[in-house]
Length: 325
Image 1: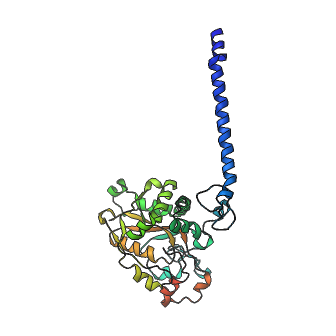
Image 2: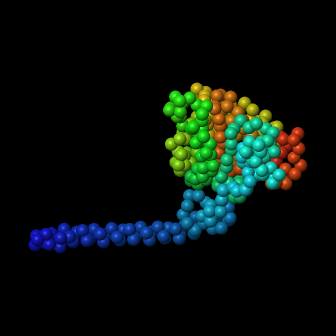
Image 3: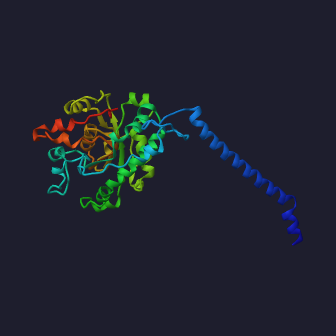
């Protein structure tokens, strides 16, 4: 007993106490240094939020303030079941197949089953996307990936149904293969200049956060962009299709045949890129294709006021923005 008391209060005990005091002082110093760095950051490295323009008060590798990020809410309202476009009240009721479809999707068979997006491109999401694509601010990919992961929850019923499709044989059900996640590719020159494919970075970030990540498998090199294309800005729907015709190819068709695929991109504008990619994938043997993007350009309801059945291409081209790239 006495020896134990001496051991606890002797030199060894004093050393433990001294170590604790030293550790406390170190952490206090670090905490103070961190607060000092944050307070000096706006002075030494002045920067403004790329969305609202207010000064950034905290150290961040993404020049967007927390309030602006919090304001980017998921798109709401009555949307087309197939392409995710906003629909007029006259088209808001479900059709005989139980789907709510926009005028274009009522008349055009899409090569993809469904397209979903997290947010409207016009709500401020344009800046984080441009920070990633054109400024190389890679931390934006994590934020955009979180949004894409949330958008994917809308496809959960489709994923479940695909896994239990009665058209599959018992062997196929037993050997259930994951859904392949395919980022829309860049041409090799543009990828080399940019240093990355933004769609791939966003997809990787989303798969780390999505609860069904084990059912989704990234396949970044199956779809290839075979030639460079002109900017889609200002082109009509017909010109957009011609610009992308023959621009994509499947590099390993054997890995696509009979598979369910998820096509991922940053922005869905008129759907020309997604349609062409899905068409190429389906022609290579894919069973079905879904599309998921972080943002989508939404047409105003008034844009459908002069819609005519013979003018499908014109209505699809309305609302083009600077989302191309």
